[in-house]
Length: 113
Length: 111
Image 1 (cartoon, helix red, strand yellow):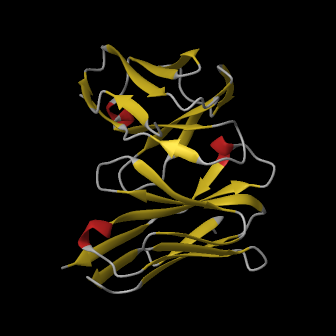
Image 2: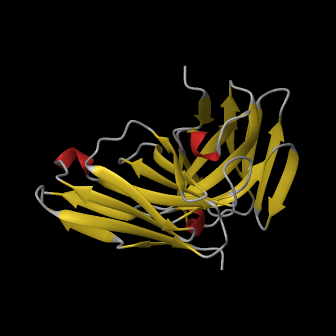
Image 3: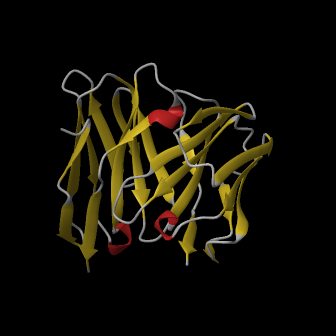
């Protein structure tokens, strides 16, 4: 199994809603990442978890809250988002943080209305 | 100047043509990734290179560390190859999360 699975594939939420994005991998990878990608732009790093601990937070607003409950699962909790937060949210994993191949998920297309 | 430059930005080819996408970078790197992204979709890792050349099916990736340049070649292109191809480098000594992405090359292969 070389997949990174993200759910849901599409999400529409209001600015007062609370929702969560989920990312799962069963490759035994110990580093997991959240990226945000706007249309026709490259992905931007948001968070890095290494061995279930947050190792990088790229100054992301607190309305985005990551969580890594175990080594296979990564969540992104969303609250009080703005329309400009609408984007494709990509999860990735690698065997460890550093010089190893990264596997990306299919992304969650988020629309904030 | 961007640390990772790709060319061309857009590329239209006829089915069967040989395609080359170029990537130049200005930082010291430990590895370079070639990624593929279909419209509205997730990213697929095609290659990770630190030296030399790799081949997978109709795809070939090369890297010249001294010249800080990499190329992605597609032989016998097919409409299903239509996608955005992204070059991303890992800064030497940096973490995987600190991939520096190029802006991508949008490839359209016409039947």
